[in-house]
Length: 400
Image 1 (cartoon, rainbow, N blue to C red):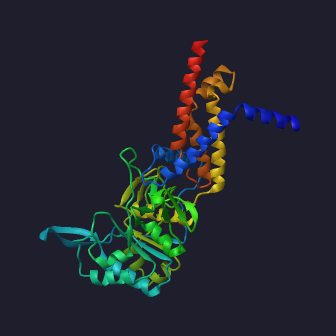
Image 2 (cartoon, helix red, strand yellow):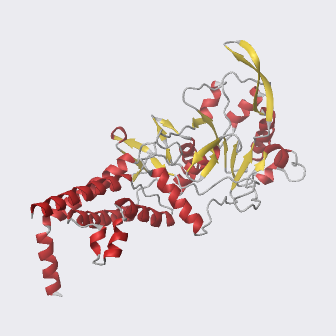
Image 3 (cartoon, rainbow, N blue to C red):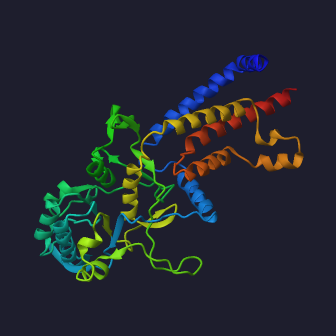
């Protein structure tokens, strides 16, 4: 045992500089990944990696996107009303909006029952859209407990009283990645819908420190932005790829709830439920899993918070820290995948293995445990290391 330990100490002493550089690199990657991870924009290659992971899971037959019984999705796509519309106080015609009379009927019954867990009504009440039901509807909304509605940057709501129940419902994409993957909880001091629900239900929140350099939740280090794996997905009664009918996992406001109130009262349908009301047919956004309604995306942001996905997992970070050191030593020692074996044919196969491949495998493994691994920073750093060391090896071989 003493001989082995002496060999280890001798190797560490000989590789002291490489080990120090690798540890430093690992530390920088961990810190930089955390800081970059607080942005609301998807990192380069993030959406593509998530799409590959999703395809692998689908190929392996893993169930993705179940809606638990505790959540009730209500579709208002077919609950519409026609109202006159004006521009600069000049009538220009009519426009279609969500039926506010039906919303009032539902909320009146929900308020009377008061047995729901929470209501997220993803219906925007834009300035200029006026109906005869507004006064009663807005009064009901503002008087209810455990309810939130959306607001959007740069667009005014038709009644100022609604702001007390509203939170930010915007999220970002980039020209490089038009598909959604990353959700931010605080946008320029403006709290998101997901964070509002989390605050009301758990009495906790995300606090910003040093101008957003780091964040905490009840003293625990956390992130202001997370990569959503979208465990809850909306599906409709449409034909899937195998030409089989999928059962929709939502109900319609009028047809399935209000019109059947005498048979199955609204109070029973919403009892102990997290209720999400939105347009699941028109309000559609691109994600790595395909098209999803904005309502389910926003609610998945809350689900991530409730599961602690925003909290820094120190065990996970420790494992990554060690992996980064090992990978760093591999590249800094001048190794490449093709040099791992003497067999020429296997060497050719391994030459197609890249740094991105290694981290994609890590991302696939971590996703198995519902952990999103952001591979852009480590992939970039170690790809540069790999290229640099291979250039040095070429130069040395030429010098010989």
